[in-house]
Length: 422
Image (cartoon, rainbow, N blue to C red; front, side, top):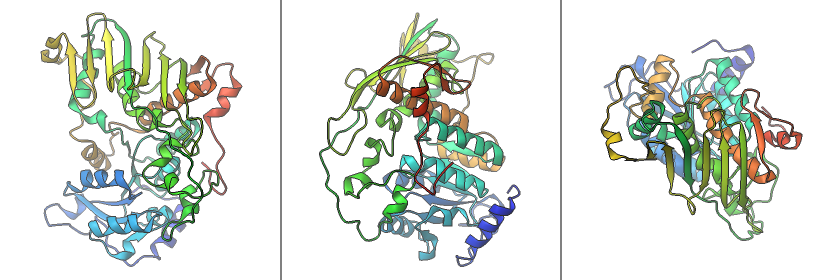
Protein backbone atom coordinates (compact mmCIF):
# COMPACT_ATOMS: atom_id res chain seq x y z
CA UNK A 1 0.00 0.00 0.00
CA UNK A 2 1.24 3.50 -0.76
CA UNK A 3 1.90 5.87 2.19
CA UNK A 4 -1.16 7.56 3.67
CA UNK A 5 -1.40 11.25 4.44
CA UNK A 6 -1.77 12.18 8.11
CA UNK A 7 -5.46 13.01 7.54
CA UNK A 8 -6.19 9.67 5.86
CA UNK A 9 -4.10 7.81 8.46
CA UNK A 10 -6.22 9.27 11.26
CA UNK A 11 -9.44 8.40 9.37
CA UNK A 12 -8.30 4.83 8.78
CA UNK A 13 -7.13 4.36 12.37
CA UNK A 14 -10.38 5.71 13.79
CA UNK A 15 -12.41 3.53 11.43
CA UNK A 16 -10.48 0.41 12.38
CA UNK A 17 -11.35 0.86 16.03
CA UNK A 18 -15.04 0.48 15.24
CA UNK A 19 -14.63 -3.11 14.04
CA UNK A 20 -13.66 -6.38 15.65
CA UNK A 21 -10.26 -7.52 14.45
CA UNK A 22 -10.42 -8.98 10.93
CA UNK A 23 -7.21 -10.44 9.55
CA UNK A 24 -6.26 -9.04 6.15
CA UNK A 25 -6.00 -11.16 3.02
CA UNK A 26 -2.29 -10.58 3.18
CA UNK A 27 -2.16 -12.64 6.37
CA UNK A 28 -5.00 -15.12 5.98
CA UNK A 29 -5.58 -17.73 3.30
CA UNK A 30 -8.96 -18.78 1.93
CA UNK A 31 -9.53 -22.43 1.09
CA UNK A 32 -5.82 -23.14 1.21
CA UNK A 33 -5.46 -23.04 -2.58
CA UNK A 34 -3.88 -19.59 -2.93
CA UNK A 35 -1.02 -18.24 -0.87
CA UNK A 36 -2.04 -15.59 1.70
CA UNK A 37 0.30 -13.04 0.10
CA UNK A 38 -1.67 -13.34 -3.13
CA UNK A 39 -5.10 -12.67 -1.71
CA UNK A 40 -7.10 -9.52 -2.47
CA UNK A 41 -9.45 -8.46 0.35
CA UNK A 42 -12.53 -6.77 -1.07
CA UNK A 43 -15.47 -4.71 0.12
CA UNK A 44 -18.73 -4.35 -1.80
CA UNK A 45 -20.63 -1.03 -1.79
CA UNK A 46 -24.19 -0.87 -3.12
CA UNK A 47 -25.78 -4.30 -2.68
CA UNK A 48 -28.69 -4.08 -5.14
CA UNK A 49 -29.31 -6.06 -8.32
CA UNK A 50 -26.17 -5.17 -10.30
CA UNK A 51 -23.93 -6.12 -7.40
CA UNK A 52 -25.16 -9.71 -7.58
CA UNK A 53 -23.42 -10.10 -10.94
CA UNK A 54 -20.29 -8.30 -9.77
CA UNK A 55 -19.99 -10.52 -6.71
CA UNK A 56 -20.36 -13.60 -8.88
CA UNK A 57 -17.68 -12.32 -11.28
CA UNK A 58 -15.18 -11.61 -8.50
CA UNK A 59 -15.86 -14.49 -6.13
CA UNK A 60 -15.26 -17.11 -8.82
CA UNK A 61 -11.60 -16.11 -8.48
CA UNK A 62 -9.91 -18.02 -5.66
CA UNK A 63 -7.58 -15.16 -4.80
CA UNK A 64 -10.49 -12.93 -3.73
CA UNK A 65 -11.57 -12.68 -0.12
CA UNK A 66 -14.84 -10.85 0.64
CA UNK A 67 -14.57 -8.97 3.93
CA UNK A 68 -17.34 -6.36 4.04
CA UNK A 69 -20.54 -5.08 2.48
CA UNK A 70 -22.24 -1.68 2.60
CA UNK A 71 -25.64 -0.37 1.60
CA UNK A 72 -28.03 2.29 2.90
CA UNK A 73 -30.81 -0.31 2.64
CA UNK A 74 -30.52 -2.72 5.58
CA UNK A 75 -32.26 -5.64 3.86
CA UNK A 76 -29.99 -5.41 0.82
CA UNK A 77 -26.74 -5.34 2.78
CA UNK A 78 -27.89 -8.15 5.08
CA UNK A 79 -28.90 -10.30 2.13
CA UNK A 80 -25.47 -9.97 0.55
CA UNK A 81 -23.72 -10.42 3.89
CA UNK A 82 -25.49 -13.73 4.43
CA UNK A 83 -24.70 -14.83 0.89
CA UNK A 84 -21.01 -14.16 1.54
CA UNK A 85 -21.22 -15.87 4.96
CA UNK A 86 -19.93 -12.82 6.79
CA UNK A 87 -20.56 -11.89 10.41
CA UNK A 88 -23.04 -9.04 11.20
CA UNK A 89 -20.17 -6.66 11.98
CA UNK A 90 -19.01 -6.98 8.35
CA UNK A 91 -22.07 -5.00 7.13
CA UNK A 92 -22.37 -1.23 7.41
CA UNK A 93 -24.67 1.58 6.36
CA UNK A 94 -22.10 4.29 5.52
CA UNK A 95 -19.47 3.68 2.82
CA UNK A 96 -16.99 5.82 4.75
CA UNK A 97 -16.87 3.17 7.46
CA UNK A 98 -16.03 0.48 4.92
CA UNK A 99 -13.30 2.39 3.06
CA UNK A 100 -11.68 3.35 6.38
CA UNK A 101 -10.92 -0.29 7.14
CA UNK A 102 -7.18 -0.97 6.78
CA UNK A 103 -7.75 -4.67 6.02
CA UNK A 104 -9.49 -4.01 2.69
CA UNK A 105 -7.42 -3.76 -0.49
CA UNK A 106 -10.08 -2.93 -3.09
CA UNK A 107 -13.75 -2.03 -3.36
CA UNK A 108 -16.50 -2.69 -5.87
CA UNK A 109 -19.00 0.16 -6.24
CA UNK A 110 -22.50 -0.46 -7.62
CA UNK A 111 -24.34 2.49 -6.09
CA UNK A 112 -26.74 4.84 -7.93
CA UNK A 113 -24.94 7.02 -10.49
CA UNK A 114 -24.83 10.22 -8.46
CA UNK A 115 -22.64 8.46 -5.86
CA UNK A 116 -20.05 6.85 -8.16
CA UNK A 117 -17.46 9.61 -8.10
CA UNK A 118 -17.76 10.56 -4.44
CA UNK A 119 -17.43 6.98 -3.19
CA UNK A 120 -14.57 6.27 -5.61
CA UNK A 121 -12.65 9.34 -4.48
CA UNK A 122 -13.11 8.55 -0.79
CA UNK A 123 -11.91 5.00 -1.43
CA UNK A 124 -8.84 6.05 -3.40
CA UNK A 125 -7.93 8.64 -0.77
CA UNK A 126 -8.04 5.82 1.78
CA UNK A 127 -5.57 3.80 -0.29
CA UNK A 128 -8.04 1.43 -1.98
CA UNK A 129 -8.18 0.28 -5.57
CA UNK A 130 -11.58 0.69 -7.17
CA UNK A 131 -13.87 -1.18 -9.54
CA UNK A 132 -16.83 1.11 -10.25
CA UNK A 133 -19.94 0.38 -12.27
CA UNK A 134 -20.99 2.52 -15.21
CA UNK A 135 -21.57 5.30 -15.97
CA UNK A 136 -18.50 6.78 -14.35
CA UNK A 137 -19.96 10.13 -13.36
CA UNK A 138 -23.02 12.35 -13.33
CA UNK A 139 -21.21 15.37 -14.81
CA UNK A 140 -18.10 15.97 -16.89
CA UNK A 141 -16.46 17.95 -14.06
CA UNK A 142 -16.96 15.07 -11.59
CA UNK A 143 -15.39 12.62 -14.03
CA UNK A 144 -12.29 14.76 -14.45
CA UNK A 145 -11.99 15.05 -10.66
CA UNK A 146 -11.97 11.26 -10.39
CA UNK A 147 -9.27 10.91 -13.06
CA UNK A 148 -7.07 13.40 -11.22
CA UNK A 149 -7.64 11.65 -7.88
CA UNK A 150 -6.64 8.27 -9.31
CA UNK A 151 -3.46 9.78 -10.74
CA UNK A 152 -2.65 11.56 -7.48
CA UNK A 153 -3.00 8.42 -5.36
CA UNK A 154 -1.67 5.85 -7.82
CA UNK A 155 -4.90 3.85 -7.58
CA UNK A 156 -5.80 1.00 -9.88
CA UNK A 157 -9.25 1.71 -11.31
CA UNK A 158 -11.57 -0.31 -13.51
CA UNK A 159 -14.82 0.90 -15.10
CA UNK A 160 -17.76 -1.47 -15.41
CA UNK A 161 -17.95 -1.28 -19.21
CA UNK A 162 -17.55 -5.04 -19.42
CA UNK A 163 -17.97 -5.26 -23.20
CA UNK A 164 -14.47 -3.82 -23.50
CA UNK A 165 -13.13 -7.21 -22.39
CA UNK A 166 -15.04 -9.27 -24.97
CA UNK A 167 -12.95 -10.80 -27.74
CA UNK A 168 -15.58 -10.03 -30.39
CA UNK A 169 -15.56 -6.34 -29.47
CA UNK A 170 -11.78 -6.22 -29.55
CA UNK A 171 -11.75 -7.93 -32.96
CA UNK A 172 -14.27 -5.46 -34.39
CA UNK A 173 -12.15 -2.53 -33.22
CA UNK A 174 -8.95 -4.15 -34.54
CA UNK A 175 -10.56 -4.64 -37.97
CA UNK A 176 -11.48 -0.96 -38.06
CA UNK A 177 -8.16 0.33 -36.79
CA UNK A 178 -6.19 -1.84 -39.21
CA UNK A 179 -8.10 -0.49 -42.20
CA UNK A 180 -9.96 -3.68 -43.09
CA UNK A 181 -13.12 -1.68 -43.83
CA UNK A 182 -11.28 0.84 -45.97
CA UNK A 183 -11.86 4.48 -45.13
CA UNK A 184 -14.25 4.66 -42.19
CA UNK A 185 -17.38 6.61 -43.16
CA UNK A 186 -19.55 6.53 -40.05
CA UNK A 187 -20.46 4.62 -36.90
CA UNK A 188 -24.12 3.90 -36.18
CA UNK A 189 -25.24 3.10 -32.63
CA UNK A 190 -28.59 1.82 -31.46
CA UNK A 191 -29.06 1.98 -27.70
CA UNK A 192 -32.19 1.46 -25.55
CA UNK A 193 -34.69 4.30 -25.06
CA UNK A 194 -35.52 5.85 -21.72
CA UNK A 195 -38.59 5.19 -19.59
CA UNK A 196 -41.54 7.22 -18.40
CA UNK A 197 -43.76 6.74 -15.38
CA UNK A 198 -46.70 8.45 -13.78
CA UNK A 199 -46.88 10.54 -10.65
CA UNK A 200 -45.69 8.91 -7.43
CA UNK A 201 -46.92 10.65 -4.29
CA UNK A 202 -44.65 11.05 -1.27
CA UNK A 203 -44.50 8.08 1.08
CA UNK A 204 -43.13 7.53 4.58
CA UNK A 205 -39.47 6.50 4.55
CA UNK A 206 -39.42 2.77 5.32
CA UNK A 207 -37.60 1.36 8.31
CA UNK A 208 -34.13 0.21 7.38
CA UNK A 209 -33.44 2.87 4.71
CA UNK A 210 -31.07 5.78 5.38
CA UNK A 211 -32.82 8.04 2.90
CA UNK A 212 -30.75 11.15 3.61
CA UNK A 213 -27.58 9.24 2.84
CA UNK A 214 -29.17 7.72 -0.28
CA UNK A 215 -29.83 11.25 -1.54
CA UNK A 216 -26.33 12.35 -0.55
CA UNK A 217 -25.14 15.11 -2.90
CA UNK A 218 -28.46 15.29 -4.79
CA UNK A 219 -31.14 17.88 -3.97
CA UNK A 220 -33.57 16.96 -1.24
CA UNK A 221 -36.75 15.35 -2.59
CA UNK A 222 -39.63 13.57 -0.84
CA UNK A 223 -39.31 9.83 -0.59
CA UNK A 224 -41.27 7.60 -2.90
CA UNK A 225 -40.41 3.98 -3.61
CA UNK A 226 -40.09 4.46 -7.39
CA UNK A 227 -37.28 6.96 -6.83
CA UNK A 228 -35.03 4.62 -4.84
CA UNK A 229 -35.84 1.07 -5.90
CA UNK A 230 -35.91 -0.87 -9.17
CA UNK A 231 -33.26 1.48 -10.62
CA UNK A 232 -35.68 4.38 -10.91
CA UNK A 233 -32.80 6.83 -10.45
CA UNK A 234 -31.57 6.10 -13.99
CA UNK A 235 -34.51 8.13 -15.31
CA UNK A 236 -34.45 11.08 -12.88
CA UNK A 237 -32.08 13.92 -13.76
CA UNK A 238 -31.10 14.65 -10.16
CA UNK A 239 -29.26 11.31 -10.17
CA UNK A 240 -28.59 10.65 -13.86
CA UNK A 241 -28.15 13.87 -15.84
CA UNK A 242 -28.35 12.28 -19.29
CA UNK A 243 -30.59 9.39 -18.34
CA UNK A 244 -30.28 6.20 -20.37
CA UNK A 245 -27.92 7.84 -22.90
CA UNK A 246 -25.22 7.52 -20.25
CA UNK A 247 -26.77 4.79 -18.12
CA UNK A 248 -26.83 2.29 -20.98
CA UNK A 249 -25.37 4.03 -24.01
CA UNK A 250 -21.97 4.50 -22.39
CA UNK A 251 -21.21 0.86 -23.30
CA UNK A 252 -21.78 1.58 -26.99
CA UNK A 253 -19.96 4.92 -27.06
CA UNK A 254 -17.03 3.22 -25.33
CA UNK A 255 -16.84 0.68 -28.18
CA UNK A 256 -17.20 3.36 -30.86
CA UNK A 257 -14.36 5.48 -29.48
CA UNK A 258 -12.12 2.42 -29.07
CA UNK A 259 -12.65 1.55 -32.72
CA UNK A 260 -11.89 5.14 -33.69
CA UNK A 261 -8.67 5.12 -31.68
CA UNK A 262 -10.01 8.13 -29.76
CA UNK A 263 -10.84 6.42 -26.48
CA UNK A 264 -8.77 9.04 -24.62
CA UNK A 265 -10.31 12.01 -26.42
CA UNK A 266 -13.79 12.87 -27.64
CA UNK A 267 -15.88 14.55 -30.33
CA UNK A 268 -15.44 18.10 -31.56
CA UNK A 269 -19.09 18.73 -32.40
CA UNK A 270 -22.34 17.39 -30.97
CA UNK A 271 -25.92 17.93 -32.07
CA UNK A 272 -28.97 16.14 -30.71
CA UNK A 273 -32.72 16.11 -30.37
CA UNK A 274 -34.95 14.01 -28.18
CA UNK A 275 -38.36 13.46 -26.66
CA UNK A 276 -38.84 13.89 -22.91
CA UNK A 277 -41.67 12.87 -20.56
CA UNK A 278 -44.34 15.55 -20.21
CA UNK A 279 -45.13 14.68 -16.59
CA UNK A 280 -44.51 12.08 -13.92
CA UNK A 281 -41.54 11.27 -11.70
CA UNK A 282 -39.14 10.36 -14.51
CA UNK A 283 -37.83 13.36 -16.48
CA UNK A 284 -34.87 12.14 -18.57
CA UNK A 285 -34.85 11.56 -22.32
CA UNK A 286 -37.03 8.88 -23.92
CA UNK A 287 -36.12 8.72 -27.63
CA UNK A 288 -33.24 10.53 -29.28
CA UNK A 289 -30.95 11.09 -32.24
CA UNK A 290 -27.48 12.45 -31.55
CA UNK A 291 -24.68 13.14 -34.02
CA UNK A 292 -21.10 13.29 -32.76
CA UNK A 293 -18.40 14.55 -35.14
CA UNK A 294 -14.74 13.74 -34.47
CA UNK A 295 -11.62 15.61 -35.52
CA UNK A 296 -10.90 13.05 -38.26
CA UNK A 297 -14.29 13.80 -39.85
CA UNK A 298 -15.98 10.54 -38.82
CA UNK A 299 -19.52 10.87 -37.50
CA UNK A 300 -21.05 8.71 -34.79
CA UNK A 301 -24.83 8.62 -35.12
CA UNK A 302 -26.49 7.44 -31.92
CA UNK A 303 -30.21 6.75 -31.69
CA UNK A 304 -32.59 4.77 -29.55
CA UNK A 305 -33.25 1.20 -30.67
CA UNK A 306 -36.57 2.20 -32.20
CA UNK A 307 -34.48 3.71 -35.01
CA UNK A 308 -31.39 1.47 -35.17
CA UNK A 309 -30.46 -2.04 -34.11
CA UNK A 310 -28.98 -2.41 -30.63
CA UNK A 311 -25.20 -2.36 -31.00
CA UNK A 312 -22.37 -0.58 -32.80
CA UNK A 313 -21.95 -0.70 -36.58
CA UNK A 314 -18.71 0.53 -38.12
CA UNK A 315 -19.34 1.42 -41.78
CA UNK A 316 -16.43 1.76 -44.19
CA UNK A 317 -16.02 2.11 -47.94
CA UNK A 318 -15.16 -1.60 -48.26
CA UNK A 319 -17.60 -3.16 -45.79
CA UNK A 320 -19.02 -3.03 -42.28
CA UNK A 321 -18.68 -4.76 -38.95
CA UNK A 322 -21.35 -4.89 -36.25
CA UNK A 323 -20.72 -5.78 -32.62
CA UNK A 324 -21.98 -5.80 -29.08
CA UNK A 325 -21.90 -9.19 -27.35
CA UNK A 326 -21.38 -10.81 -30.76
CA UNK A 327 -19.93 -9.86 -34.14
CA UNK A 328 -21.15 -9.77 -37.75
CA UNK A 329 -19.47 -8.41 -40.86
CA UNK A 330 -19.97 -7.81 -44.55
CA UNK A 331 -18.19 -9.27 -46.38
CA UNK A 332 -18.20 -12.22 -43.93
CA UNK A 333 -14.63 -13.06 -44.91
CA UNK A 334 -13.50 -10.10 -42.80
CA UNK A 335 -13.98 -12.25 -39.71
CA UNK A 336 -11.69 -14.98 -41.05
CA UNK A 337 -8.72 -12.73 -41.72
CA UNK A 338 -6.19 -12.88 -38.86
CA UNK A 339 -4.68 -9.68 -37.50
CA UNK A 340 -1.04 -9.83 -38.55
CA UNK A 341 1.89 -9.59 -36.13
CA UNK A 342 2.85 -6.15 -37.44
CA UNK A 343 -0.68 -4.75 -37.26
CA UNK A 344 -2.43 -2.98 -34.38
CA UNK A 345 -3.30 -5.35 -31.54
CA UNK A 346 -5.51 -3.89 -28.84
CA UNK A 347 -5.46 -4.54 -25.10
CA UNK A 348 -6.45 -8.16 -24.50
CA UNK A 349 -8.36 -8.94 -21.29
CA UNK A 350 -9.25 -12.53 -20.38
CA UNK A 351 -12.20 -11.39 -18.27
CA UNK A 352 -13.21 -7.97 -16.95
CA UNK A 353 -13.11 -8.81 -13.24
CA UNK A 354 -9.95 -10.91 -13.65
CA UNK A 355 -8.28 -8.02 -15.46
CA UNK A 356 -8.93 -5.76 -12.48
CA UNK A 357 -7.54 -8.32 -10.02
CA UNK A 358 -4.43 -8.90 -12.13
CA UNK A 359 -3.81 -5.15 -12.29
CA UNK A 360 -4.28 -4.76 -8.53
CA UNK A 361 -1.36 -7.17 -8.17
CA UNK A 362 0.83 -5.88 -10.99
CA UNK A 363 -0.14 -2.17 -10.65
CA UNK A 364 -0.58 -2.08 -14.45
CA UNK A 365 -3.33 -0.04 -16.08
CA UNK A 366 -6.66 -1.84 -16.46
CA UNK A 367 -8.44 -2.23 -19.80
CA UNK A 368 -10.90 0.54 -18.84
CA UNK A 369 -8.83 2.94 -16.71
CA UNK A 370 -10.05 6.33 -15.43
CA UNK A 371 -9.27 8.34 -18.57
CA UNK A 372 -11.03 5.93 -20.94
CA UNK A 373 -13.94 5.59 -18.51
CA UNK A 374 -14.21 9.36 -18.25
CA UNK A 375 -14.10 9.93 -22.00
CA UNK A 376 -16.80 7.36 -22.75
CA UNK A 377 -19.04 8.74 -20.01
CA UNK A 378 -18.38 12.39 -20.82
CA UNK A 379 -19.27 11.80 -24.49
CA UNK A 380 -22.61 10.36 -23.35
CA UNK A 381 -23.13 13.35 -21.05
CA UNK A 382 -22.32 15.74 -23.92
CA UNK A 383 -24.99 14.02 -25.96
CA UNK A 384 -27.48 14.65 -23.18
CA UNK A 385 -26.50 18.32 -23.00
CA UNK A 386 -26.88 18.72 -26.77
CA UNK A 387 -30.40 17.28 -26.60
CA UNK A 388 -31.22 19.59 -23.72
CA UNK A 389 -30.11 22.81 -25.44
CA UNK A 390 -31.19 21.68 -28.94
CA UNK A 391 -28.38 23.29 -30.89
CA UNK A 392 -25.08 22.27 -32.43
CA UNK A 393 -22.27 22.48 -29.88
CA UNK A 394 -18.58 22.78 -30.58
CA UNK A 395 -16.37 20.98 -28.08
CA UNK A 396 -12.68 21.18 -27.20
CA UNK A 397 -11.77 17.67 -25.98
CA UNK A 398 -8.36 18.81 -24.68
CA UNK A 399 -9.71 21.62 -22.49
CA UNK A 400 -13.08 19.94 -21.92
CA UNK A 401 -15.00 23.11 -22.63
CA UNK A 402 -17.58 24.17 -25.18
CA UNK A 403 -16.44 26.82 -27.62
CA UNK A 404 -18.25 30.13 -27.28
CA UNK A 405 -21.17 28.72 -25.30
CA UNK A 406 -21.11 29.67 -21.60
CA UNK A 407 -24.68 28.43 -21.15
CA UNK A 408 -23.72 24.92 -22.22
CA UNK A 409 -20.52 25.14 -20.15
CA UNK A 410 -22.61 25.60 -17.01
CA UNK A 411 -24.13 22.16 -17.62
CA UNK A 412 -20.72 20.48 -17.29
CA UNK A 413 -21.04 20.58 -13.49
CA UNK A 414 -23.77 20.80 -10.90
CA UNK A 415 -23.82 21.89 -7.25
CA UNK A 416 -23.83 19.24 -4.55
CA UNK A 417 -25.94 19.28 -1.43
CA UNK A 418 -23.86 20.11 1.65
CA UNK A 419 -21.68 18.72 3.05
CA UNK A 420 -20.73 16.79 -0.12
CA UNK A 421 -18.24 18.11 -2.67
CA UNK A 422 -15.43 16.98 -5.00
